[in-house]
Image (tube, rainbow, N blue to C red; front, side, top):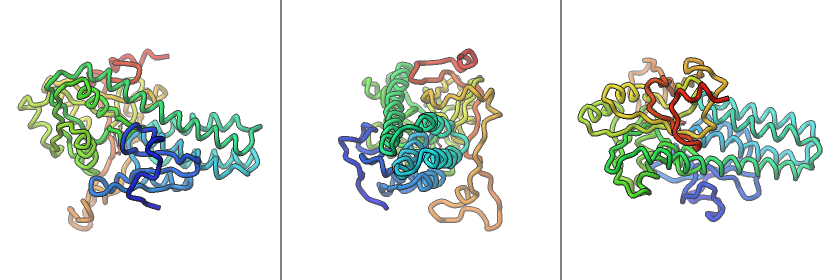
Length: 359
Ligand code: MRU
């Protein structure tokens, strides 16, 4: 089902904004997502009614961005628990585990997905003595908690990062690490929003972010909605503006930050980090602690999602390559910790090397 207006009560939206990437219905039986494939042309909301539909929407990037897909998966489990409320504890547990597995594997690189599912399933494992109604209520409440915590984390890291952004700065960002990619407010865009809220005059250069164009379609849409000055550039133009001294900082989000401090993010991020180093410009990463994966030792161990040739070969249905010519599509790359100036999380500002010492 699709609708042109948010299908939720605006007073109950957890994003804290006019729009949300994802919300759970008041009854806990449906997940509403803003269809990001349609932006900026149309604001369309899709209703999802099962964990299977939620996993398919994550795979198809109806909803995307590491924290947002974690929250969406948690809501997918809430819907599953609602549907399973008349099942016995044993079949409930088996079905919830299966739904969790389906959701956690929908996309491989963003660790927030597996993190959220694992947090939800820990609760589910303790549900043997509860009624179906009680189970569903607890699962929905935890999913909403994950959503609320993410918005709070975005605001906290936004503040930590904004303190590093000088008045009058031009910030380059890549992909979309905004309200659309999170529970609300955004990570990299949270830093930009917080700097603007501090009264700083900020100009943003948004990489269009080939092939999926999250920068051109989504980051530009969000910042334009907020009246923050944004100009879109093609990915290949970043070097030009850095060489001209027009960029004061690069701020990006992350899909996974591992113990070594290496950072997986949207394909093209690593190139920007190299450029930042070459030009002496700070390269900042903003992400919630749910993106930190201390169990993975270094960046080369991060699974990198390979998406379809079609996303590279076509834009808006138009074929860009000769028929029969293959294309490659790694959706993420890894930036070594040595290129990262600082990481902002809800816990504050960290040197990437700090993660090695976290117990
Ligand atoms: O493929 P996507 O659009 O899900 O990739 C998103 C990114 O790479 C973002 O930069 C990252 O998830 C951080 S979102 C706060």
